[in-house]
Length: 427
Image 1 (cartoon, rainbow, N blue to C red):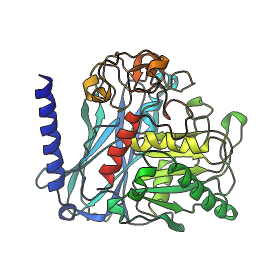
Image 2 (image 1 turned 60 degrees about the horizontal axis):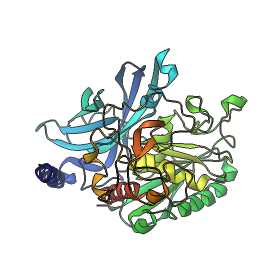
Image 3 (image 1 turned 120 degrees about the vertical axis):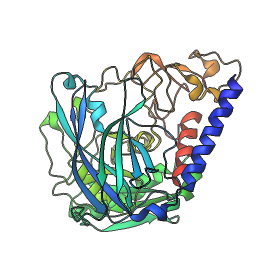
């Protein structure tokens, strides 16, 4: 029975891959981006989407071959359908800050709205945009849809924040590489040289880790020199507020080390200066902190002793949709994972459907769950504790960059997930 199920999965995956490859980018898109600005409002029980604005951005940095998402990661998915044929021509999973906030204590007492943005390749002809969200059972359900006429004069092509940009690591065409852009926050005009040096240093940290160092030739890195009025970032608990271009701040969701920004529209405005797949915001601070949201952005302070670890850990979230594997640190969410369902992240499991995870990487004879003893310290297993809780959520390795402050410490399961994502974007 298992062989039949596996064969069926392989056939389905292969068919989906062929279907994706049969979509010719130039038949449906031009090499620019359609940016969709949304307002996402609600609380811990429900939420609603509202269309805010549409923009044409000057570049498309993504693959022109792998147009349909094969991973099924993220809290949401955007699907673009050709209006005349109804054919699905592009899709991507993604997450935002809203779903984290919706699991916070505050969401049980108040409703809030968040700006959110999505970018897709710019269509040649009218399309239908469909937004899907996960139901309580993790299935995607349609939550919002609208039509886009790409020739509409209400879609502005203006690049509202134009700054000096540069490709600092060039390994080839953007459609065949993972393109990462560094944005500056909390650097004044006179500190742009520091930003450039910090970007070079952080890229060096990045390529000190597997599987990135083995795949260095599949990455391009860019910088956008986006100066701020003041140096640093906000520390609300200390009543320190700095005038910075991206409006980053510590104490997101009242967690001291959680350094994020709600100003996603400015983030996208700045990133639009170059073609990109992933955004990393560098914050000019020596205080430990950062964050990462899948297919949204990652962020880190640059001058803390662990900045080299933070940039890689947060990129694991933003690029590979890797979950946090720790369970003893303070977080701003409650009951984030429903133990009755299998989480979508590739590096944690509730054992509800472990066959979909790393079961094929576990050696025969390894007990499941796996004891946290010296015998299994360097073996792939199923170790209890992860996803912010000590019980009911399991991780694949005793320790990992997604659990502890390990440099070059992604476990084999996380490395596999990241490598698969690199291959997807670099094709």
